Image (cartoon, rainbow, N blue to C red; front, side, top):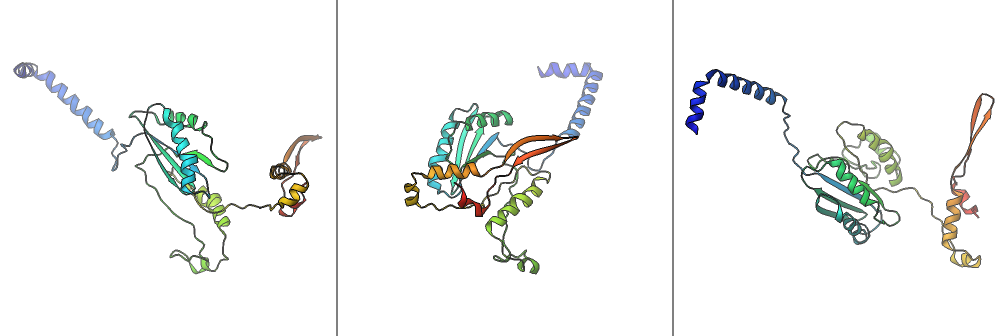
Length: 258
């Protein structure tokens, strides 16, 4: 067999030379166009389900969020492995798919199954960003220089009034997170921690029973009294005026809700 190939190459010298030249040209052009990466992405297709349930212990998060999520994802098409991590107030379920699975197909399958999971009140579920595990993760934290001086804090920063955890969370979500998401190459910014401003209503159960009411009645009354409403528009000549009812409660008005 080898002798025949050698004999054919010797008889057809011009054809072999032309084919060799074409092969060299095609190879040279392919080398110029091939992408070169220092860290090539060879990771599997994966989808992460991130569920935040602030203020709850890992045992509760595992039992009421992580386990139901894993059961719901058991029948996802082309799924290969399901892994989970549970910490206080946070559940992360990672699903690996077969080679060649389209990322958006996998996310669609997971999103459809995620809607069937009955999460407890206060739990917020979302899918992780469309990114590869080869990417880098940068962790940072916001500190109050007036309370916790850091190396990066200047004398001017230390002289500022102390900020609460609620103020730091607002700064993170409204300023820092928006600036970071606008940077090219950043897939997502996930914040964790801080406090959300809230108003607490302390109810006297004795007086509540005397009026024949329940805690649900108080909750419904507060919910219905706290909200804005739209009333359409009124045409006045060439102008159109929007009508809206402003009903958001101020802290001093909460006790007057009937």
